[in-house]
Image 1 (tube, one colour):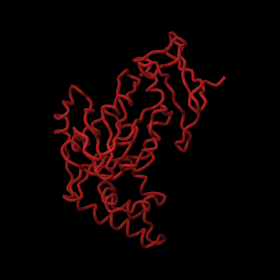
Image 2 (image 1 turned 120 degrees about the vertical axis):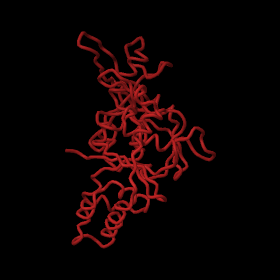
Image 3 (image 1 turned 135 degrees about the vertical axis):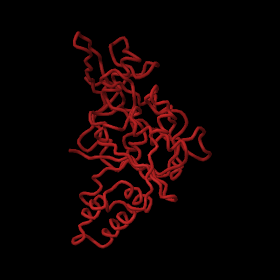
Image 4 (image 1 turned 90 degrees about the vertical axis):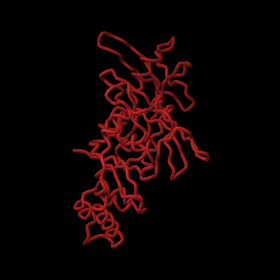
Length: 295
């Protein structure tokens, strides 16, 4: 079946949360997705803690890895009471582990759940745009970090099979509880991708603002898959005189790498293009650590 995720925006002071069934991660992590739309709308109103929570946190003792009260409250917004206590294996696990599950279970019933879809649709003119806005900054008040949303969007754009251009949204990747990003990027990543950031903002206090707050550091952030981005670059930038795929209008070559089963990168490759009546064929050419092609 695969792991199911829930997008959760929560205010621990007012005990208000918005929780949406986001299905499998790679089904609802995109700019054109209604789940992402609701989360972006909320963050443009005020700060919320965000957790793109997966249901696998209740198996294999994973729940024991969460210790901060803010994270445990995030888990309590979307987990089922019975699943939490079944995962604690009360008879065989340590008392401290059981206390974690008990804290989550006790808080599940205390949340005031809200829905903002109607407001979010109007805010982003959804019927026309079918996307959230990528202007301003996604800021992390907990870590004093920020993502330039316009820069992120332009670097992460890719082409989907029906010909539309979209992007994986930064919010689901940065705030997931684990395992989702690898499914969204299962074919591989561009060399610009920062997949190591997945989950590093989970449960942090976030907000989307127009101006960068003083003292906040903009981080390098890009999440895009190998083939969708290749299709986009071919359409927008084309190839050089040698038929090699370009990554930008400055003549730089597109490079990408496969991921192994643990999400680790393999060797980088550049690509040549062959076209036929059947479509486009991307042929990879291995590059060494200096960026030169290997024979």
